[in-house]
Every structure is written in C-alpha cells, then in structure tokens.
Length: 593
Image (cartoon, rainbow, N blue to C red; front, side):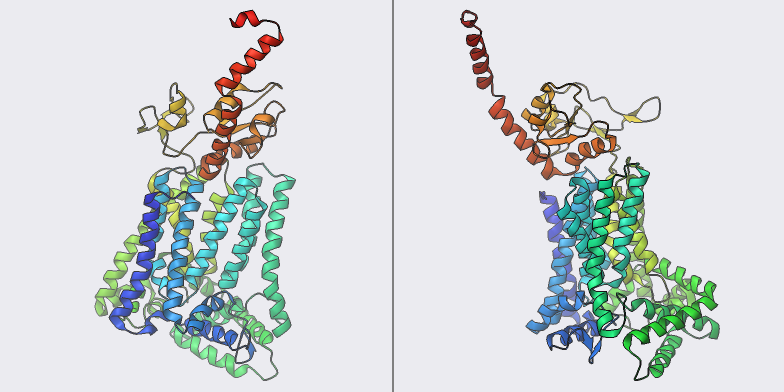
C-alpha cells in the first residue's frame, strides 16, 4: 500500500500509544502483575510446558480448553526471560500492524483517502485496543489475524487470486488457534459469500469452487487440532471451551437465579462439585463432555432464565465502555469482585447507583468512555448503511457487518465483559472511518470541474447525477479528481477492429476495461494493461470497472504499462514513418513532397 504522510503519522501514533500506556502504568506501580489477568496464568503455564518438553499439557494432562496460538506467541518472551516487556512490545507491534490493516481494508471499501485516515485514527486511539496491548492476553494477536484475513479475502475477491484466498483461509484458521471463538468464522464467511452472490444473481461454477476451496483449506487447518485432541484425550472437537461455558457460566447463572444467590458464589460451588465428581478413570474428553451435558440439561430446564442472562451478556459486550479496566491497570480498582459481579447481581442500574455512592471516579471514567464508544457505534452505523446501499453488494463489505455480529452473539452470557468486544473494534473502525468521511463504496459527492465537491443533482427518478462537462487530457488524468485517482475506461467493442479509445486511454495512463473481443485483446492484454470482460457479463463488467478504482497499486501498474506501450507503438515519429512507408509502397511518393 502506498502510504501518505497522514497514514504514516497514524501508524506512528498507534505505536506510540500502545507502548506508552503500559509503560506509564508500570512506571507508576512498578508492579508487573498489572499486566496480568485471570486467564494469563494458564497461557504462561502452557508456554512453560511447551518449553520444558511436556507438550501442550498442564501437569501431564492434555490441554483441551486452550488452543496453542497465544502460548506459542509467548515463547520469545519466555526464552528471553522477559515475558512482560517483550510480549507487550510484540503486541504493540501487532496492534500497529492491525492499524495498517484497518486502513488497507478501508481503502478497498472506499475511494476516499479521508475515510482511510479516519478509520486508521479511530483504531489507533481506540481505548480497548490500547488497554489490551498491555495485558498478557490473546486479544491483540486475535485482532491481527482477523484483519489479515479480511485484507487477503478482499484482495482475493477483487483479483480472483487463489493465493489470496488461501491466505485468508489460513489467517482465519489461525485466529481460531489463538481464540477458539473463531472456530465457526470460516463457515460463517463461506455462507455469507454464497448468500451475497445469490442475491446478486452472480452464482457461477467458479465462484462455488472458490467458496469450497476456501472452506476446505480452513477446515483442514482446524481439523489438525481436532485430530490431536482425539488422539490424546478421546475428544474429537476443537476446544472444550463450549462445554466449560455451558456449565461454568451459563448453567451457573440459571442456578444462581433458582437459589437466589450471587452468581460468583454459585459458580465457585459448581466448580468444586465438578472437581469432586472427576474420578480417576474419567478421561479429560469424557469429563468435559459430562460438564457440557449437565450444563445443557440445566439450561434446557430454565430456557427463559438462560436467555435473559445470555442477552444481557451480549448487550454488555456491545456497550460496556471498559473504563473500569483502565482504573485496574493503574491499581485504582479491585482486580476481582468488581464491576462485572456487581452488574450480574444487581443489574446495570443498581451497579451504576452503587458506583455513584462508593466509587464516583469509576462512574466518571465509565461515562467518558461510554460517550467515546457511542461515537464509534454511531459512525459505524453510518458506514454500514453505505456498505448495504452499494449495488451490487460486495462480499467483503457485508463481512464487515457479519463478523462483528457473530462475535457479539457468541460472546453472550453472565461472564461477558468489555474485553470480548476487542476483536470487533477494528471492524467497527473500518465502518466508522467510512461513516465519518461521508463517502462509502457508493460516493455521495462527485468532483466537479473546479475540483470542489458539490451535492449531485437528482434526475427524474431520484438518482444522483452530476454533469462534469468536457475534459481534456489533464482533466481526465486527475485535475478534477481526488489525488492519485485515475478513472478506468470501459469500452464495449462490437466489431473486430482495433478501438482507438483504448489506445487513447493507454496513452493517458488509464486502465482499460473492455469486452473480451479479438479487436481489444492486442491492446488490453488481460491483467496487464487492463481487464477483459466476457460479453453480456454485467456483474463481471461492474467488478472490472470498480477493481482499478479501489486498488491503487493495480491502477498504477496497469496505467504505467499502458503508457509504455503507447510510447513504443503510438509515438508520432513511428506513425509518421509508417505513413511514409505506405505512400512509398503505393507509389505515391509525390504526395510527400
């Protein structure tokens, strides 16, 4: 991607904030435990087991709940004996790369450079992203994998690249190895892709084959770990986190409601009961399957209680500002027994009232962060509207809505908290950038001859139009266009002759889009100086015209090759020499005098 100075500045800001926040917290407390959370110990324990040669296990027992992605990420810090500083530095770098990926994905959805910069800035300063850079947790790595998959898939859809398709499938699979909640994302992505092409009425054998290959690569990569679990513990699934969630969180919420006791108290009691029931002959796989069965039965007996707790969890993930976590980082709030338990036991209103009485500073920070989060959601909604209004619908645009919805829905329950929203935020930043810039994939403003943006007029059917007037070579090359923008030329050819407009476009450095016809092939050279589209393929023509608009690298390379061809074949001296030769061949030398 060709970075502008503004985009490079956003990257620098993202790195500075991601290094500065944990450093400032450490300088104040001088306590490395501020970088730890409830789940940190298990990740570090598994990394130590790998280093000691025990394999991916705890106490010689194969690990079925955690997956190996993040423990492996911890190994450099473990080997260097500096797990906190080195891991947090690596996470800061990963977060900064994610900022760049957010801008790259936004560039594929919007032709506005403003949208690109705003999206990158939104994620560079996003509070959750900054906070969890400084925690020994899997969030930063998971978000990186997710956005890497988004970019690869976007480019594959635009260029039909099989390499990009494989890259997207593998990145999405590795995201599940980092956090098992990503396990169903490849299937959700494939289904979304299929639905969009059906709605667009552009289903072809090639599209179906690409979806099938994407799904096959993803599930094959995930299947490796399922085989490992089956061989080592008789457990054929990817992760036992599903069974743990059913029993330890969801069923505990149902039982707490039945018994009228605090949720955390009931949860601890159920964990003790589970450990007491584990016999020496019970394998790890059987143990987790039993937990899942017990949890499922308890939920089935009280479905409405479960649904209530689950929906509240989804809402909490979406709307909990996360301000209290900043207070915890600076040791101004208890690490456990804090806001989450208060909300589960007393509800949101009760928790707010108690905070106002006992910890007004927590209420103030929560309110401030809540306003920031509301702005993200409002701008993201505006960007989502632009994506959904585009015709034809684009798979990569719709996925910016589907992936956050999936993560929200899978994260519900009584233990849901702001941390679970972290992987949604780069996706929201993409949409927020598009929404804030006021230009989505369907531009609402068109450049006029004087270079100023004006509201387009409306035709008799209410459609937006703008009359740009006559443009010479300078105008076509960008005098009235955004910086770096070159409009492609779409030229349908009905006859076998060589179209002169294609030569003109090549000479001006404009990518050519034309019908796949013998008259065009020598000039266009598919994917070299332009794109050829089969006659009658309306969707293919649309994609071919939009492709160079959205991909500056493709546009510049095709334009440069066209200029080179024009310089060689269409130079004035060459044409004059050929005319002279023709006159001589026809015996018309006298006409040259």
